[in-house]
Image (tube, rainbow, N blue to C red; front, side, top):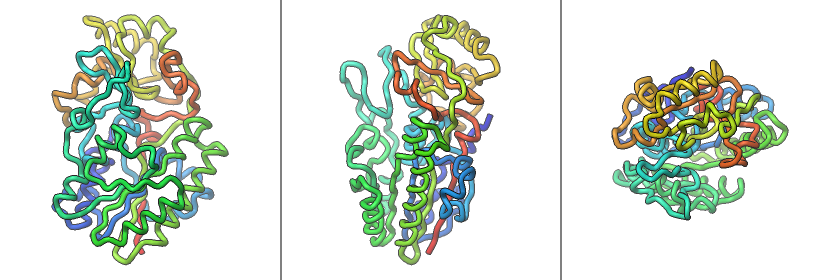
Length: 369
């Protein structure tokens, strides 16, 4: 088990350090050197171990000055984006998983799709009320720019974690590189650019597959082009929101009686399950999941997960009920699927979310002109 290194070695420590490098009064936990302009290239799914396994496909990235940090728990996009957007641990910002119970409703909320049954929605400002690093930057006179596909502009997740940015839509690699270079012309520029196709390829065909390697080559070339356009005094950092594993075994949690009895809602995702139990069934469900999964997963109570620091040194009381009564985190190559409710996820080859090094370790690469 790799518990994230909150406080000096995690994604939650990166945004404050970037602002500190620009001269703002923020904690510089990662000790980044001063810069006039900073650009963060966020590659969805680029785990440090995945990158190191294929240096021939990513020669530019593999040659950079590098260190490894941890994603946070769970190692998944919504949680990591919120840590990067707020500079807070999951226990502080409350985005503690992909599919979370909305307390008092009996429903799960998809934090990526931002929908509830019946088409109902949740206010992003209420679900994630913490000020963002971009709002803090604006208060200090620094404009933050986010360059990403147009389809994500104005979504609930974007509003929750990127409040305060100037959103610059750019769909192709060429467009994103050009928009970043334009933004970096500004004094004290604070720019983030996102690429998500590597993660998509990993889910569908597995990391290390032909399609995944093709996407890794695209990422490497994009990073090279971003670096070539850096003005004097600028710094480019490349990181990821999580790594990935390829599943070698799947358990259908909807058809195993021991995994359904006493369960009211099955949240989270295949590598980080939040199990919400019926009243009075918590102990029974915990024991049944532990026995059924044996040594294939870490299965703990909510209290044990919190006290072990999985979500950070502190979990705000208001977020506790978002965490499952039981938290099941596969080790090895196991994926806990729910094909009826989440059919596409059940078909994946690559997964992430757990506390293994392959999922937790992400690179922090640096380029300066």
